Image (cartoon, rainbow, N blue to C red; front, side, top):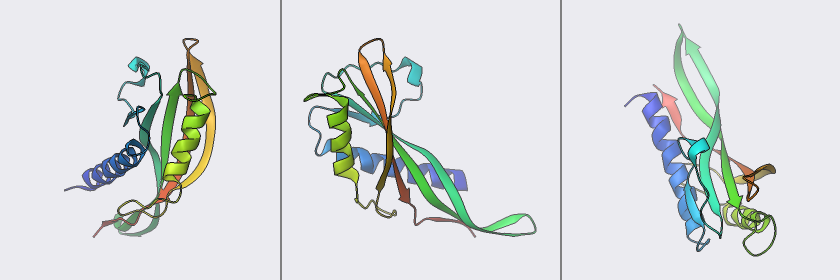
Length: 148
């Protein structure tokens, strides 16, 4: 198995664990992986939608010998939740859903990762005059290493 496949497997596993954690407490809310074609995604659920993606990662602790990486550690991963709701406030509003996601995930440990930490949130936009979309960012440190 090559390095890319290892990384894909780790990221997919982490995204799945985050989705399961959210699904266990957010009844009636659609929880899914961020779509391959986001421009074609359509929000349907009146109670809200949370889309999960590992947005970026940083490599650290690299040592090279003769242009070959001996040790590579996927250190810090940035996780983004895209939260879409038909209202900003209220029982099924984006702000309440975002707060619930933060409460569910903050401080949680996932297999092979350190404690997940909330970093920021922002309004991504209002779409078709009906869907409020916010992005909530978390970070987690990986305990995986690549290389020989």
